[in-house]
Image (cartoon, rainbow, N blue to C red; front, top):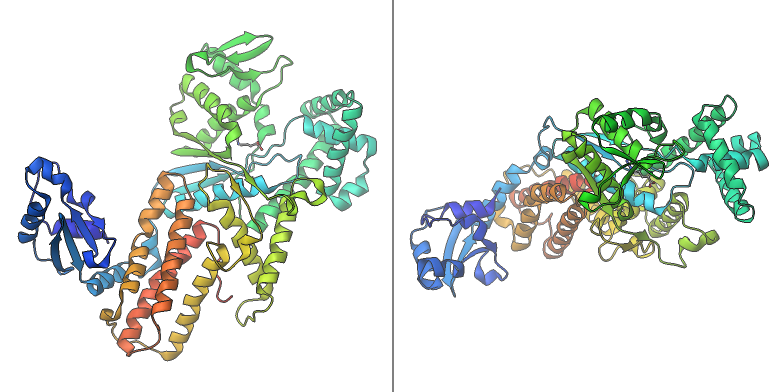
Length: 559
Ligand code: ARG
């Protein structure tokens, strides 16, 4: 329900160029009603005092069943709503979960996220990337878009030559079979250490990489084996996070389309040779040149992205495509978007780079374990152990403690990846993240379980009389209003590509809910009154279910 519109509709006065709906605001103090119309801005145009304007508007108001009465005070027209009527209407409108979702539309959005470089362990930055991408994907789906999730894996480049070089010198097949990704990582790290002492090793790695590119009979299968192991590990971790991709087509696939890209750009007279390399000059647009082909004939990051964008448009005919990465890749995206535009690809205007700030752990926590950056595995393990601590004294009758622990752990991880605005840097204080106090995931999950528990008890009471909404207090009205706001918040989050707005909306509901609990005994009173309160909690439950899903937080039955 659009409460502001409903109030604006009761205003009979018409003033050229004035949209009352936009002027109406929520009152700060209860004494000033629920909503008010400040009349100061109108004084200039109408050459009357704000007070007089308020009185004139007030005296010609149309009768509305939702407005109890109005008052003119200090240049404001204050509206006092019939709260139980408004609440009843909103509850009725929102009682099914589909009221918090849009109908399907025919539009397609591709999202390129997670996109890990397979030569390295996944780390805390990948959590941020993956969860921002997943949350945006879910927000799009909520609004009816069809989403294609693309994991553009980094399966190309000299790092793989390094792993193979190291394997040839120090590795063995059984160890790789047995320890998988860990064996590969050890080889990669050892290579880099040795190459510092003996820089000639770099050349060896480059040669192995060349052999990969040439699909050398011996080396290429080895490369494929490495990729398989790394992909399996990435899949395993993403599965734990609850994220599944539609496409894993990565950089190596597009490295083979170098000629195609070069020919296309040549035919449009966009290329130039500079120091042996092929470039697109972007100086006109205040950007350094976009490198297309290296002087040794290899493709570049931008070349592969150009090929990928064209391929994806051919495959999916997307209406929009988002790429999620850190700020540091901003120039890269600007450059190849521009090249696609210059080459006449109309879809280039629908490409968007969503870039996020640093996400780091405070020192002394797991970030310094083993003296290296925390891997995603370390982070997940640490979160699990914290979650276990938090729930260890609780008893569960419905859910398994292990499941609860994992859902709490995952909730805390994801919440912290999303709570701060995408573009801002943020510190992930893993210990604070598990507190039940303050703005945390456990606080939200716990708020939700309280609804579940009341609804379970209510079922036993078997209340089914017609609801009497007059029992809803001011606190209840606030709660209904916060649910009424959900659709708007999701739409805003989409427009701004900002999952933190969904987090905020969910958090607001939880806080309002806890204020309500503090003021009211839900299961006390006559059955018609209990019915009204239960119906209201039903919509709060639906709202939170939808919102939690959008920010990748699990709902729990008990906690
Ligand atoms: N693999 C890259 C990295 O880890 C991110 C890829 C982002 N997507 C893209 N289409 N360039 O830095």
